[in-house]
Structure formats: structure tokens, C-alpha cells
Amino acid sequence: MARALLLSLLVRQHLALKEKFRARYPHSWLVWESGVWNVPENSEQNHGDTRLPTSDLRDCLPAGDAMCFELAPGAGRDVLPLGRASHNVLVVNDATVSREHLALHHQADGRWMVESLSQGGPALLSGKQLRPGQPTLLESGMQLQLGDVRLTFHDAESFHTRMGHTAALVLAQQQRLSREKPSP
Image: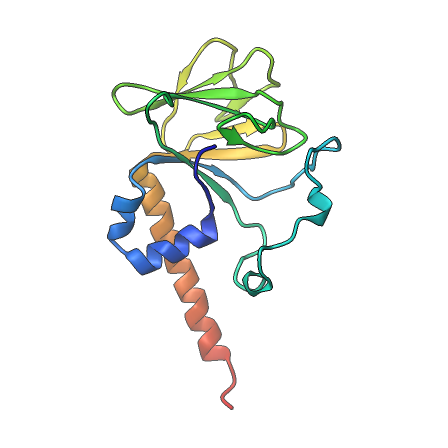
């Protein structure tokens, strides 16, 4: 499986690492935007009992946090299958996503293409239906719609820009809260 991190945790790393963040995360990303999550009925895991690894995280993770998938090609990993089944490199465990929904293809020039799989359900790219067997070039900001799941593609530069904007919002919110906090 590919490296997947919560957006809020990446923002914290962005704030701490500053320019070193770019070196640590030089790849493209696919962001599972927050929204409705439809837990599969026949899931192999009991999601009803899912708990945070520690109660200390409860206060620091925002509601509706997004999941970020790093698209890092490697030896034998130029094709990243995406779907609900656990054997996919990118697992999106939502009942509205097919077990094998689509595949992302890394090109020699560093760009990514997306292909809808024939056994998968419908997939939209920026509102247009993807046809099975017809790979389509991904560009930063394009959104994939798989059932109720919305994924945004970012190349490395646009992902770093998004992290910068999100980090600035977090800092502004923290500063506002600290000003509003009554003195003891």
C-alpha cells in the first residue's frame, strides 16, 4: 500500500519542517476530500469499533480531515490500482467505490494518467465520464468522482501550495483562539 497521511498531520509537518517539507515529500498526491463516508456492510474490518490510536489525538485532529495518498512511483510501481479491496495500492474503503475502480499510471516524463477499469463503477474526471481502457492525463486540481468519494490530484508544487495555504489558516485560527482565551 502507498503512504497515506491525514491532511492535518501533513500540515503540522509543513509548519515544523518549512522548506524541508518539499524535500521530504517530492511526489504528486491524491487527496480524498472530506465528505460522506459510506462504510461497506460486508467489510473485513469492524469499522464501527474503529478508535483513535490514543485519546491524546482526539482534540488535535479536525472533524472532516482529508486522507492524502502519496503517488510515489518505484521499482515495479508505475501502475497504482485504486479501489475498495485491500489488495489495491490505494485503498479507498467506501461502499460507493468498486473493489477495483481505476488505475493511475506513472509516465516516463513524470506525469500521471488515470484509467477507469472495466470491472469498476463509473468514474468522473472534472465532471467528464472516464471510459475504460482510455487513460487520461491528470493535471493539478482535477477532481475524480467515484461514487460519493471525491479525490483531488495535485502535482508536487500544487500540493506544497495547498499545504502552505492550509498551514496559514491553521496558524491564523490558533492565533485568534489564543487572543480570545481569557487570562487566568
